[in-house]
Image (cartoon, rainbow, N blue to C red):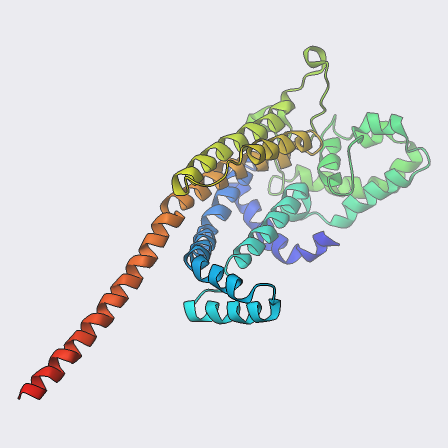
Length: 347
């Protein structure tokens, strides 16, 4: 349902991803990296706007505190006074919400683009994907043995497309080898259609990171405590996502301390989010983990730059300078009026 709602954004962005992949010899990873960079560059004005909104809130905080003391628990009067103050000060009540909502919508859209590259980048019919998945998972013989043979132990409706792409590339067509003849016959037209798209130079997508087949971004890394025997090169993806987020969290925390030395320590949050990425990264296809790496490094560094150059103290100082200039200009005009009046009286 949600995927359908985001198709308005997904389809045009899918064309952009397809174009970028074509520039880089159909390389999926390169397309994701450049696409992430472009999206974050486009979002810089929204980040600045959000930062400015936060500064405006800081600027009027003393007046807000006065209103709270004045009206106490009277929520209705407090709300009316707050709205009036916002209007007087030219502060938007939703100034920080809009950029956040746009970012959230784009984040969800990019998630579906990464999870459904055949649909949005190669122009495959989603019905072919849906039919293959539904026929196999609803078959009577679908059991743990089939899951192991197909590598579908962690496959859901969300990541089915990447799993199916990976299956089609294993020895040509693993479905024909693993599934029963009757079951394969039901999905054969869909499989052949997808293979045709995959073999077309114009729509073929290369999912191997750095050209390494062991870093196939359609695959989901499987963690095991038996590290020495069952370790996978694909583990580098969730580990990389963890390290990338740790790096950007450290930089962001440092900048926040520069901007606001009295800000409370966020060490707990700084560790929590990277650990969540590491944990979830072992349950999602490598393509999603690779996007997280790109997003953390590119988006995090750009956001840190915005925080540094448009820090609250700097922006607040600019706002106060503007207010002082306005006040000085007003007083100068009043003084001129007074001098002119005084001259007329003397004359």
